[in-house]
Amino acid sequence: MSYLCTLMKSRLLRISFLAFIIASLLACRSEFETVRLSNDPELFLKKALQYYDEEEWFKSQTLIEQAIPFYRGRPESEEMFFKYAKTFYNLNQFILSSHWFNNFSNTYPNSQFREESDWLLAYSNYQQSPNYRLDQTESDQAVELFQTFVNTYPNSTRVKECNEIIDELREKREIKSFEEGKLYYNLGQYQAAVASFNNTLKDFPESRDKEEILFLIADANFLLAENSIYGKKSDRYEDALELAREFLRKYPDGQRASDARNIIDTSTKRLKSL
Image (cartoon, rainbow, N blue to C red; front, top):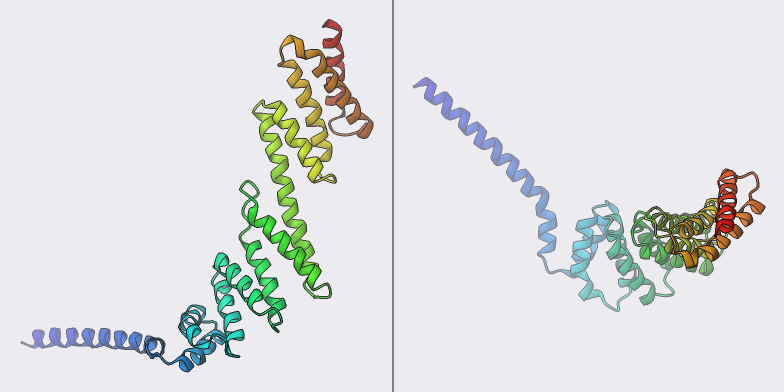
């Protein structure tokens, strides 16, 4: 009998403890849920701003969404819309933050928050910039937005960082362009490789890989000649010969100088035999 009483007490204690935990959890949620279900726009906004200051981004965002229909066109809407956009940014939802910062800047062009909104719009696109191997549409959009920011706010303390990010994104585009040319080259698609490398030099004339690119253009022309039908070999060896000579004029002591001389020697022998 004593054993049964002890067992019952133990179970009651466990049940009471669980009930206490559940009640505590419900109590923690009750304020937000009560506000959310209140249908009181002033309470929505008041608590949304409080949650924002407390960095409770999701709660703030949820209540602002409910407040928006009641505050359109009212003075409170400017700060409310800006902070609404920023909750998406702080939640790392950069596609949505980009949309809402753009919307805000267009709706409130003279706002006190306009500069920060334009900055975060550009930065949201920057945060979406993918690995250089992937499509760089977001990177290009970010470059454009940062450049617009610099032009619009030339005295901003953020100009230096804008220029650094622009350089970073352009370097990513440059690497992607160079790697595309190397891919064609490694696959033996030499005409495509030459076209791709020439585009890289056109878009990035001061490329850090310029020496390597110019050598690969000469070598791709040489390999194209090696793999051409008889009727096209002569012209293509001539092209390779001229490109290799041009490379040596620019980089006589470069790392690829001996390889360029091999192209010249071999192309000259091939042309004599032809």
